[in-house]
Length: 113
Image (cartoon, rainbow, N blue to C red; front, side):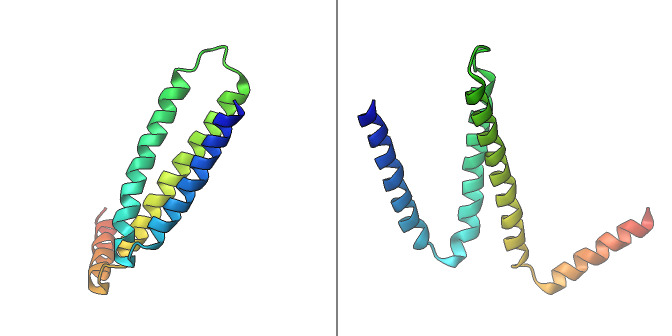
């Protein structure tokens, strides 16, 4: 049992080092597409957590249910926050002319109603 725990902790630490090494070498121009792809993967993780939560037996301990629910909430916050940041980053690439035209169109639509 302890050897399996030790192996899992070693894998987690090595995955952290590999992830840091890979992400630190990504050029700035690729951060937005990479973040969008990561958000899609996290969405799949949240969906998997919902499936696991739905298939838990009714006699499962409350501690497991609480931990799974907290993980589900954090995963959902990660997905939503990632899409908000991606939207803001994409907004930085819009020209000022496009942004003011969009604001005028929104203002005109609001006065017509």
